[in-house]
Amino acid sequence: MSQEKFNYCKQVAQQSGLNNLSSKVITVGGTNGKGTAVAELESILISNGYSVGSFTSPHLFKINERIKLNGEPIPNSIMLKGFSCAKKIIDKKRVSYFGFLTFVALAIFKEFDPDFIILEVGIGGRLDTTNIVDSDYAIITNVALDHVEILGKDRVAIAYEKVGIARANGVLVYGEDNVPSSILNVVDDLNIDLHIVSKEKVSVYLAKLLNSRYGYDLSIPCSRYPCDFSLPGRLQLVRGEIDHLFDVAHNPASAERLSLMLRELNYKRVLAVVGIKHHKLIEETIRPLISVVDRWFVGELELNVNTKDRFKPLVESNSGVVKYSNMICNSYDMALREALPDDLVLVFGSFVTVGKIMKKLSNVSSL
Figure (cartoon, one colour):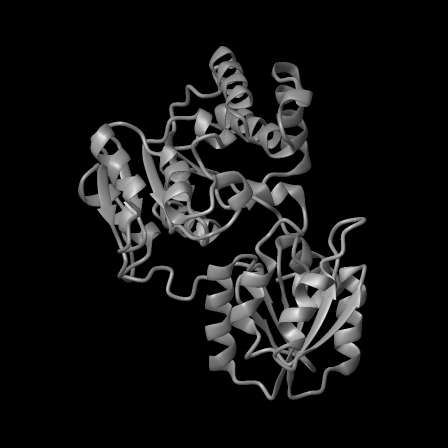
């Protein structure tokens, strides 16, 4: 978002009182793992008797998934009230779809007044619509290459955008040992209380901090709580006649993690169904997977776009095979026709890709 649009959103929020919330606000940014961190924090707080509103993106199946009260997607009746409120105070032509939904969420949270509000950043942080609300506590899960056309072409530039969610004299939990210099500079300038966490989850660390330093009564059952926590579409293995692995990985760092899991699973063959939006780092994202994927089934997510030519040279130069369709669901059908009982069908590349294919499988979409 441009500075001009961000300033407009902040002005509207101030005039309407939507950024003046009595709830404690936790803002979660980072390249990967934001949704998991939000869900884990949400689970910890709710299990200890606190009320929680959360705003995440994108959704897999229904838009209601983006706005939750106490861990449950809001019903249509509350969503419509939020839409009605947001339409009265903001010019939809001056904000993005994500920006408008941020106002919908804030309107709902203002009415229900939960103990905590957890906001997941859309892109970056400094100029993200979620940043019109001052955070009491901020989390940055990690910094890696993604959205380089907006945020910058290296970690230092990207990190500068992400650290914008932290506030002067506030708390920032960072989830890697390797902290970019741009974050350290802002931390020094604004006297931010920085906690560098690499040996446990950032969500668990912040919960412990809330408990030990800020007077919240939180019981955390184990150091990796929740021990078996998982979200739909995040390294989700589904057993069946043909096993499936669903993952929303769409950048090089998340593809590296996916590659490690595929090596551990060690299937006879891996058939990858992939749809990645054209502005992403496609070549860099598929490179870690070339040695563990046997056949590629590429499908498009956007009209009048051809990503096949960005896959074929890299894959075929490594003796791989690429099949192509202009629709991701057709690519999945091709993979399924070739799959044998000992194979794994991998579906990855974006939330859209995973959501579309999971909808085709009723036994998965109900999980």
